[in-house]
Length: 288
Image (cartoon, rainbow, N blue to C red):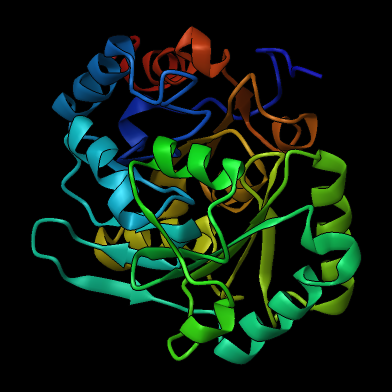
């Protein structure tokens, strides 16, 4: 269900927005895996009006860098759902919240149950590198889109001497992912793990304190000393919900699931229709 443009929200004055935070996949990058010129131009126009722009993504830090550079951001980059926040210019690592090796081992035990093992490709992200049991077709597609290389190690327990930043399980069967998410939310409380989907085929687990909402709050309140009311966020999936709820103006993409659209202040056109550019024009550039 697409929410109409008339979805209730208080009138946002463009001068109030001082920080714009953008998701990557499904928001500023669609099937082309690049940012279209109209989105870049809208971002640049917003920056020229004094709005700072940041990236918040579930991607690896190294995979998100080219998008960060494409939009000309000067703020720290939020990667891994905000579990890893680093300034690409100074290389300062502002935050690195991990999943404990013991918890990652427990997740692996669950993934390797006989009824699940052959249905899932399991990814461990450690020190901004991707480790997998084996290179599956799903992993190959993921690595190509992400612009990274996966390292196959057989038993993933071999790399658990270091704590993973994120654990991901992917399957082409979205019902498998939905069941996985539902079952693991019964086993782990929100105080133990942050569990989400970034796309319908990706189950993701991070440190319980790490989500895009806490990451955006850090940028706004700790670094920029501004309030949530001065923040606009744009996202398209369940891992964007916390930052959409946090911001004074949370925008969902037209390609977002209905439950994500329902919590947004406004719903933009889809990513393939350059919806992020439409939202920026409407709220940050028009009549200002």
